[in-house]
Image 1 (cartoon, rainbow, N blue to C red):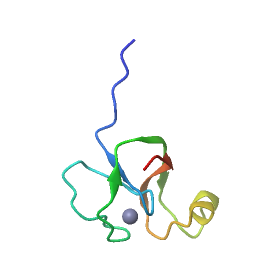
Image 2 (image 1 turned 120 degrees about the vertical axis):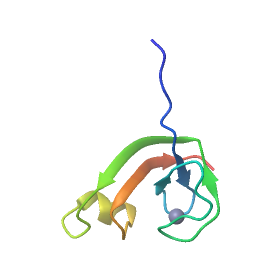
Image 3 (image 1 turned 90 degrees about the horizontal axis):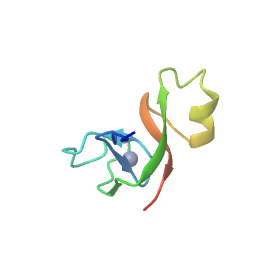
Length: 69
Ligand SMILES: [Zn+2]
């Protein structure tokens, strides 16, 4: 079975996932991205999300669990 890679890259600083054409991370403004990331969480409600608190996320969106720089 072939695995399809999600066409997203992860911000190294805040782990937010963005489409490949993104130049600047919409979450933290960083320009450092990595295509080596694992696991995805989707945060809808920052206030109610334990994951968001744990990962220090302040904006709703898609985030990688692990990012390799
Ligand atoms: Zn970022």
